[in-house]
Length: 112
Image 1 (spheres, rainbow, N blue to C red):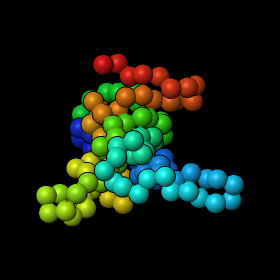
Image 2 (image 1 turned 30 degrees about the vertical axis):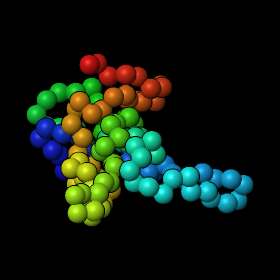
Image 3 (image 1 turned 45 degrees about the vertical axis):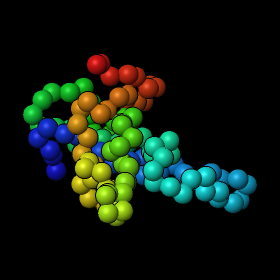
Image 4 (image 1 turned 90 degrees about the horizontal axis):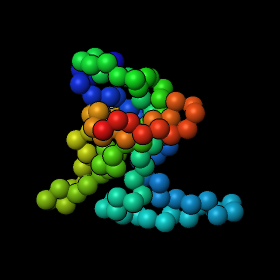
């Protein structure tokens, strides 16, 4: 499965990093979807766009914009997925919302 203009990514872990392990117990440190501070930003590339060449490859770990995995409430108060949501564990990410890559030798910033 490939997209023409966007990367297909999946989160590494869950959508939100809002739990902390303390001994043998799990502590929830945030229960709100409104705070961007607890949104997971680490992802793995599932496929690259067909329309242009890129140095990013399938399997690369990347840091993405927090709104890709984020959920929000619309004007009616109903919880919704971001526009990047594709299906259960897959999201579409435009090139300008991918900031760093780890190809196995540490995090490197992307141009631009």
